[in-house]
Image (cartoon, rainbow, N blue to C red; front, side, top):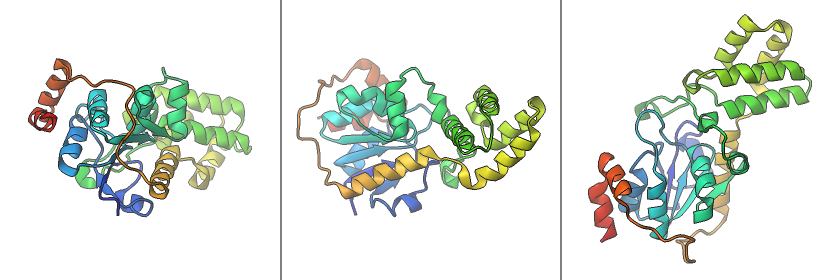
Length: 254
């Protein structure tokens, strides 16, 4: 077991399944102050960000990731908030993994909500309560490629999916909207049946691949110099105070 690894995980993959690929300490979706808390509580050599909170409470801050890396902790990201933060902080040394990470690196103006999904409370396992736009789009592209739907219908469905707020986005809601707005009833019926086995879950794929990679490679604390010099700013201190982690941060900085 990698007791020195901490993984923040939620709707993308259950901790029970994740442990099949990487033995580590699994925590609920990451939010503001949680990286600081993880460093203080577990002294990890590596932290893996997969899932995070968005609306329930403030999201994980870029500065706390940089702070952790400045203390020698390797930070990996994939699939969801991990892919977003890795795409933004690659120049500073955060390590991204997977197709979604590469997509955000290539298209920095892509909406964060494309990988966001509503989820149940932590007490109920943080399970997904919908589908992400990126998984919907990839599934529709695959359906077109194998001849289940025509290109015109794929474009129409993608437009409808993007028009749904992420908190209400799911294949079920998409098909309900499609039945009211589109006329390709037969194709949609075939698509529904095909999705039971053919749907793509890219977030899960990226998360599993990262966990497998970490299990297969020896990962230690950072030895090489970072590409930035961390500065404890007033703004960062205010964020940590708001998240209830300022005292912990200051004690770790001593």
